[in-house]
Image 1 (cartoon, rainbow, N blue to C red):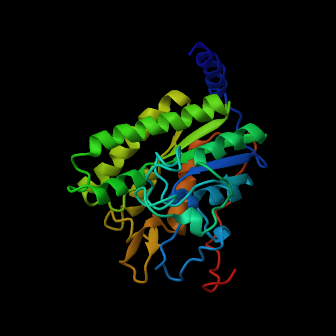
Image 2 (cartoon, one colour):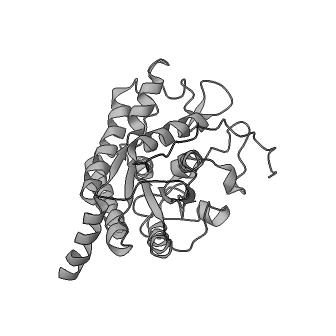
Length: 299
């Protein structure tokens, strides 16, 4: 125990004065389908799951603006538990609710690794120099999985679930600081609400964000307010993220998925950009327009 305290204190002390981001630095992104840039199969035009580089999440958008070397380790369907242990129930990454196979067995991720996302992160941070930013966005799939596997849609289990997510976030960030000895900038990216017009829906997302933020604070993190960015952008569209064009479009303007559109991902990148510290003289490039979509099955 004393050895662990001895290694943690210098790392956290150094994190308080983490070096700023500059072009050429490395950025490690951890998370689930939002961080990955995933789009539903019935998005028009349909996505090409066999070409991971065609999915542009907020890490890729931020990386292009700041000219960073991005390692996006996110996996669609990852839960806070499966990010630590790939045998734990996920919502489609390694398995679905602890059964069958998941996305990783069928399609490529942005980066290749065996084992858990956390073990990759620790290995990456130990081996790569000039890593100046690590971001984490996790927990939504814990809620989705709980809602699908409980009789009341996770209402009575929510408090216990949030405590488990918080414990897992603490384990993840402690590993990044103590095991990987990473003392650079560390950011939590908050989730958005699909609609802000329904107070109960927005409140559940806000409660998830609070649980993650509070668990993360001892590790010298900064908070990227994705929740607030979406809320402000949706304000003139009936407080609805779909109507505001921030979610994946499923063929008609009022039919949306649960994942960010390219515009929604740009808002998350903007939230993260506001949260991090840049080196003097670093001027972000303007956001790029959406890339043209290749024909299905090509690329």
